[in-house]
Image 1 (cartoon, rainbow, N blue to C red):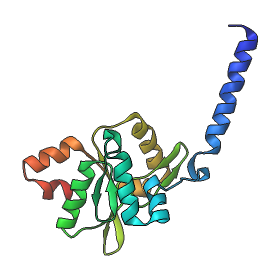
Image 2 (cartoon, rainbow, N blue to C red; image 1 turned 135 degrees about the vertical axis):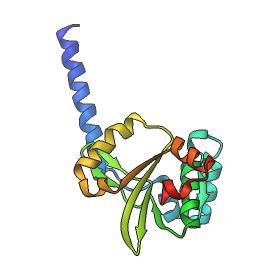
Image 3 (tube, one colour; image 1 turned 30 degrees about the horizontal axis):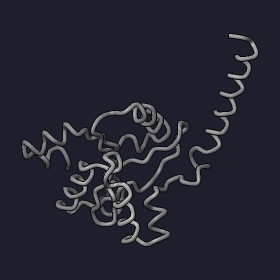
Image 4 (tube, helix red, strand yellow; image 1 turned 180 degrees about the vertical axis):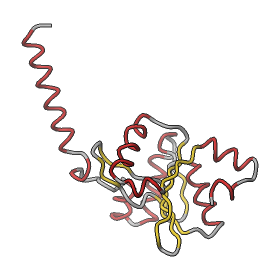
Length: 171
């Protein structure tokens, strides 16, 4: 490679990195928000859910599952919410986004008992590279929360439902 080309490539990479970092974490205007959250604020819950379903329901990646005031991104999350409700467990969905050195992390469920956080749950169909990068960083920065965080894999959930051992796995 010509020396001039290498200098240009290095400079281009540096500029892209600076632009990318300027829009991550709390500096991002979408920090802690989803598109659906913005639409709910702007149009109200009913209209926002209708718009969301019209726009995204035909795309498999954007398939959502409405339940109560939430739009779950997976049927496993929906089943988990229904299970928690059937056992009168107090929970919230994607309640808080945690700032990491590598970006942000938003766990699926926060579980409460008498108003006190007792467990954080993450539902995973499979472990992605993004999750492998974020979760160790979360554990390092929030060790007390990491101690009460459970990762529930799709296979574990499926087997427990087949064997009717939900109480053992979930409570």
